[in-house]
Image 1 (tube, rainbow, N blue to C red):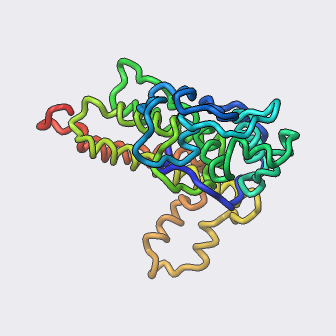
Image 2 (cartoon, one colour):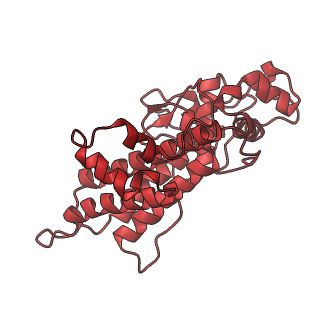
Image 3 (cartoon, rainbow, N blue to C red):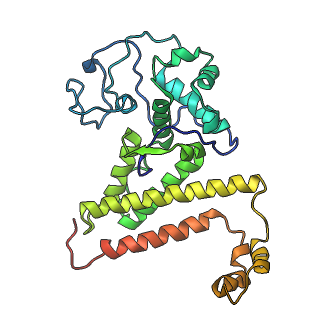
Length: 297
């Protein structure tokens, strides 16, 4: 779960990892044709009732994700659906990166006219939000009965990282809002539930989940950047040895010790770096979560 929801993007994703992604994640509720709000079935778990108008303005994409958006007055094109459009857009982003995504490109993937897509989504920004929430999919699921909070959050973080790794293009979509889509909200709730029964306050639980979310996204982005640079030949082998020829050990004694240890030339994958960082964050949360003098919240 990203700390905020996705918006527009101009950046390019990671190469061509394949064309996986069609039909991934939660169902997206289509909104073609014309209907009153009462005729649009909300997603289970939504607090917005189909016969109640919200007192605040929701982004159109959010209303579509939760199934509470009033349908367009323009009739649907036969064979098209919101699910198919989102799945095709994910396919394009997976194969060509966000830089290759456009309404025209998605339409071509579907064999449809570009303007026919606007019967389902009003803009590319809206499509991006639908794509990210769909690609993220639901959280890992209920905790095992013998899981503690730490095991639950570890599985939560590993699951979020795996979602980013399956859809690296989603890391190139800027974050513009707090979590609003059904899947993103489910991830947030799942993280908070992992901390149920600890002495953390509700604010501390939320802050802990946001901290982990930011770490996971940042690590996934760094890992993607390093893989992209390596494939482009931008990362030089023997970095430590090269750096050792540049620095004065008297000026940079600590760095020199790291060079001498061979740490800068280790060919470790990012998994070990992720595990180390996650463990240290959980150690920090444990200082609060395992306070003996505070009753469980």
